[in-house]
Length: 443
Ligand code: HEM
Image (cartoon, rainbow, N blue to C red):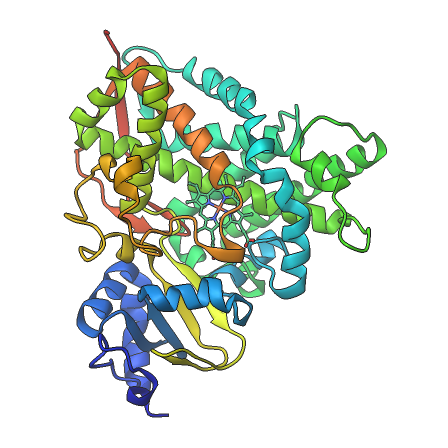
């Protein structure tokens, strides 16, 4: 097929080679230097680029109209990308990995539990967990903020999902999984599947053993709750009571998959958001000082602006991926069946056409007046449309609570070198661990 004929965007005057050789050559930078590879492609070829890697046709789509087409106007044609099929063995057919009617049924059943009104009722749970976490910090403590965030948000999500349950096994599973994303980036690229299961490494066996233990634990909790239903306001109880249009509820397996999806979707992204927000404050002490000088109401609002800005510069969901179901044509591009699509919030959020001085950390962009100027689809840290994040409100609440607590009680600085780079694992995380030295705030 003539690729030039497929693209009529005025931005796209040239296109990369589509040869088999280029597909092979792209393989290494695509896997080893993913964000910089995508950045270079769009700098050279524009907002819509077709390239080949690992034998696949892959579109990088950073054009805002085309993003609207994919996410809002014709979302049924754009299925979950390969990124999620890698995780299917772990997440099953939960909201993140399912498609079509199954996805619609589950989304309709699960969504009410995440409405703003339902979520507001959880602020006591969040504040309780944040208080517990903060009681572990002291004047002079040296903390690993990534580890602290993962621990905190795992504890919160376990309580949100299962009620009073303080389940050590579930906590252990999350921490172990998180350590894999630092120590074994390769498996994150290949994914969890029948081939990786057979790799002759100790940690592969450990991981799958832990998975079995995790499943056993979740199924035990589900069976126990079925036998003794309770109205404890947990997501598990709500999902058990949810019914589809025909009056059918979730099966045990469906519940396992949804709970697992929520568990992973919630803690990892939130932990990255808190980590990056704190990191940005270490680089911009004037903004931290401003935050702590405000009264409670104004500080809560400003904390949210800080979080929005951290999500802009370091969006945990650095890529939103899809695979086309059928051919589809817009006025700018013609997609073919089974094309892969990557939308890159990371690059769009850092584009100077949409944000002045894009690398400058400026929470004021998100004031009530200024945010009206932000162009639609130029800021999509939570996605958009029928597959947008269900937990946005909850995520913002829990990250803001932790950020405010840390900032009000302590001054902090990084002890091991001040600059930290980003690394695109499953989510966008710091390429290395860094530590904060806490000093009691004297105000
Ligand atoms: C700052 C933290 C978070 C960020 C940046 C984030 C980001 C995202 C993004 C970008 C998507 C859409 C992916 C796509 O279109 O392919 C998504 C989906 C989702 N998120 Fe989040 N998320 C966060 C926190 C949470 C939390 C706390 C929960 C649950 C308590 C959650 C639950 C979900 C679910 C269930 C989906 C799938 C929705 C669907 O496909 O119908 N997320 N998230």
